[in-house]
Image 1 (cartoon, helix red, strand yellow):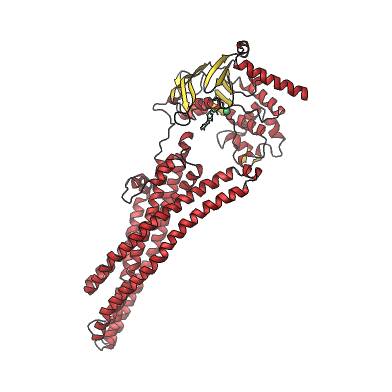
Image 2 (spheres, rainbow, N blue to C red):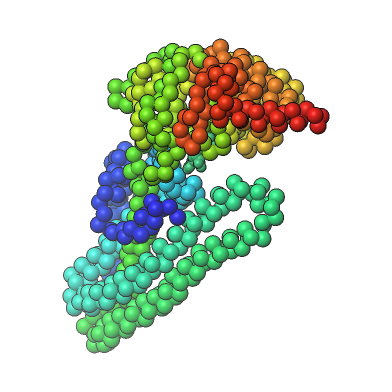
Length: 606
Ligand SMILES: Nc1ncnc2c1ncn2[C@@H]1O[C@H](COP(=O)(O)OP(=O)(O)O)[C@@H](O)[C@H]1O
Ligand SMILES: [Mg+2]
């Protein structure tokens, strides 16, 4: 678990937190009027449902008075017809209203969450790579899918049900007080008992809910990582190990779920018991009264109905408070992401230029991926416009990092990166990313066609432009040989293409945008000689585009570079042309000799 995650998990959320609501207000606003209207309608509906026993009790009273001879047949018939039609129309209106309320709330909940999810995804995408590493990828997935779903239930379920429960309680209390005085006190005296009991259980359950949530989020992280690494797992025969790990994960969820269920297995019977006690007390007072003729049967019926109805809203409220708790923690989780300020953004008054001349300068640049663990230390160099510069050095020296800093994928910790003498932080991100073409070491292909993978879905690019881009890097030779050519399907991650082919597609992807500056993290190590030749040729062609920065593993590919920098442990230790560096008899000279010996050995073998 990362530090950031730890901080989130240990945070205690409180119902009083208003910050959450503030973060959510903009999403409710567009639907506020509808929402309020529906809540008002809901109040009407609930009132109708709750006062229904009163109407029924009037009806029973009249029947009793008729049988006692206090009402005539025609009087009782008229009143029964009247009361029954009132009851029927109340129920029809209430049912129709309930339908509208349910529909409306579900819709509004979905709208709000749709908008929120869209923004959340956009926001996550605007974060820098180092920020994204604060949480495991699975955690973002859970937050964008589950937690937002949970949030939407606040609007569609929790809030209206809470309103309904409170309203029902109030109406029952007020009606009983007004119509039967004393009995209202009996209900009232049960209120604190039930609430306290529920509160106690809720507090206990909270712990298990949190445990369950945490375990689910752990499982999601585990799942996404295991599927990403499924090939490795299978190749190394680690399925058994993975299965065990999953079982542990799964057991954790199961245990926390069971614990909370155990709790409720005690809670609900206790509630029923209380309800029975209440009913018995009410009946103990009321039945003798009816027998003595001082209370009518209808009134008894109303009291009975209300004592069975009185407990469920209290339970609902405590249950909802539980849900609210989980909604609040979902809110915290999503808000924590929404609160992350994108680190890498366009500067104020950001500079926009159609193209770069191509001068690149590092001025005393230091950089660390992790706190104080500097990967680049006080690096300075200048690459002139139109030149080809190469970085060489051992694995882990910091070459790829230099490339990442030029495209502002990461932000420098100290010093400056300048393009055409302007700090890259002053360019708008769009301008920078459009003009700087980066070809990464590990190519990522998306599922879709080759054409889509070159254009990355940019509809402004025509098929001609896409094909020209592919031709420019020499990718068209292999693409046109495929049965469906540019429409050939790319499976997830591009597993149906060789490393070299993937590399060529990524070259084309970069070049269709006609960048004025090309950065290339070359991965020739796992490429066959034929592909290497194609790449070599396309590199030569690309040199005419503008400034080019190459990270080279095979020194033979960069002999012609205008300047070569030798990187070692995050510093530049040598620089110059191929010939100059050879003459120095330093690191470059040794590297070159080593590689040439390998090549000679290869030639002899062949
Ligand atoms: N995303 C990352 N997070 C943390 N450390 C990293 C990351 N990428 C690279 N490093 C570390 O930075 C150092 C330089 O890496 P890199 O620039 O990729 O080297 P090179 O490309 O020269 O092989 C290495 O020690 C590597 O472990
Ligand atoms: Mg590298």
